[in-house]
Amino acid sequence: MSLFNETKPPHQNNDNTECHDVQTQSPSILCSSYSITLKFVDICYKVKVEPTNGGGAIKRMICGESAKSSSNELPTARIEERTILNGITGIATPGEILAVLGPSGSGKSTLLNALAGRLRGHAFTGSILSNDKKLTKQTQKRTGFVTQDDVLYPHLTVKETLLYCALLRLPNTLTKSDKINVVDSVMGELGLRKCGDTIIGNSFIRGVSGGERKRVCIAHEMLVNPSLLILDEPTSGLDSTAAHRLVLTLQGLARKGGKTVITSVHQPSSRVFQMFDSVLVLCDGRSIYFGKGCDAMSYFQHVGFQPSFPMNPADFFLDLANDSLTSIPGA
Ligand SMILES: Nc1ncnc2c1ncn2[C@@H]1O[C@H](COP(=O)(O)OP(=O)(O)OP(=O)(O)O)[C@@H](O)[C@H]1O
Image 1: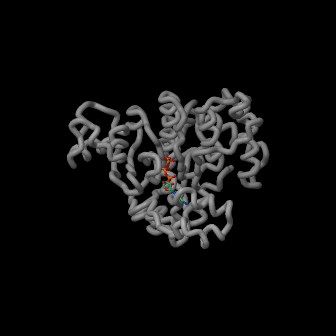
Image 2: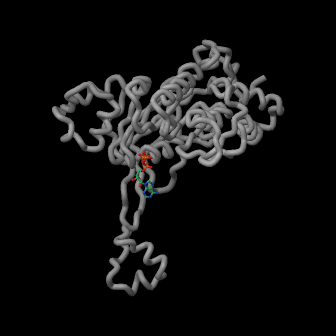
């Protein structure tokens, strides 16, 4: 029986090699028989912003429209255009992880939203191609998006959370017991079985750990077996060991499941950084590097930037993107 309307058995990769559970090495149902190569070319995104001066917007809210027009002390609001993304180009391929790095506010989340087909309108230009074709609804259905902030019910257990989601998101052609099996497989794949009966919790009620919570969010998306998995800062708030474990899981989903994984990361450890196949470094909405992660240091060295002591490549790129080169002796 095909759970996800696939043409090949769901436990086979494109190269016909068997796909196995990331944790247990048992055959996995989470392999993508449909692969997505995502190309993005010259992505630009602009927003209109109304500059506020000395709390002008709040004054207008309190005093009403009259404050805007009659008051001489308030400057006339002039709409300005701000470029959030400026000519970003790259590619993400099946079986690999593309990491988007950059300081806070550099445009990582905006780019991920664009790649998932969530940005529209005339403010957005450039092209995003899935297997050399424009993004379609079908591609979007095959895309899983894990946002930075989750909206999980604190009182449900991990198993209940995923089952609730499976019952809502999986097609009616599947029986309830099929859906329970999918939930069980996904929990195994993401190492969630041991905390299956623990409640999610929140800041007032003790529940799963931060790492487990992130895994639940990923599992939520994995239920529909996406071919393209986009994650916005999945490691934020985790210690370096938990972050490493999580990226190891993502690597397993990419390598063994044939998925295309794109993730933004704020400050990965060097151990995590070397797990990324390709890296896109953003600085103020522009790309300062796109290529293999292992080539990034030598590229910057080639163009004249080199740390004077061995340091985590990701930290070095963040320093570069933050324009704090002058603070790096010898760089
Ligand atoms: N709709 C919008 N209107 C105005 N400014 C926006 C809008 N969307 C994004 N921005 C601005 O664009 C910049 C990039 O935002 P974005 O959330 O993509 O950054 P980021 O790199 O993901 O940051 P972080 O790591 O802190 O999450 C920020 O300065 C943000 O304030």
